[in-house]
Length: 368
Image 1 (cartoon, rainbow, N blue to C red):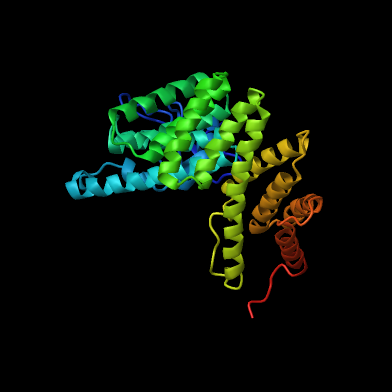
Image 2 (image 1 turned 45 degrees about the vertical axis):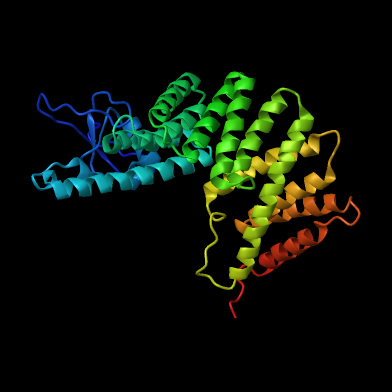
């Protein structure tokens, strides 16, 4: 019998549905007819155990109990004051799902991001209505997840929906426009429409700089994506120039984070954000490694640029607590910088290596 299939790696079980006619339930993921029910919240339903497991790993484990009050209708919940409270609870769920989906996307877990992104969109429509600008972040999360899975036709449909919403809401802020153009640029780059990709990345950079400033790490993400398009066009000098801009921006940012870290290192209650965030680290590491590999394989071998990017990676992983990676990238940075007489990074790199080595010797320094 398969009355209560246990899902691997979770504590959630399923129970078969026994519903009277006229009270059909739909699967949380695919909206087909459901045959199983979550045994923990009893307000979430699935067509099969596979979809339950995907939803549990993707988001349901985080929000299982939070769904009970918003999916349980009582006379009390129909009162106006309680309806407002329900809207606030749904807004909280939207934010949880957005953060979880974004984190999984940053880690490259595109399939796992889908349940959180889907729920984020459904709940956003419920709270804000079908034409609200508040839907755009959810459309973009779904588009990014499907982009990673290669579902480009679906990505185009989702971004078309997002564009329609933005057109209906001319008061949209710079952040919405920057994110939409970045997603559109990535879609056009993936489908080979490189000129359209460059145009959208240019708009992405413009709106991001208006919101965050030209020297922001958010803005330089557009430069990085634009460089990839120019690389496909074989315009390597432009790629090198854009990567240089990105590397200097990240070097400045990480240097500031390192300085803050050293000021707070004696205080265990001071947490460094966002460098302790795994998803953030994975995303930045991927960007910096791409640039390092490009510079190392470039026939011109720009030693200053290689040292700069390797130093960025060393700082990133020192702040993340991985002394082995920090040491490896730090040594690469030092060896390369030593090829350049009086290079201004040699001293900061040597200081970082000393910090890494002292951390390896004494991983739990005294706060005395």
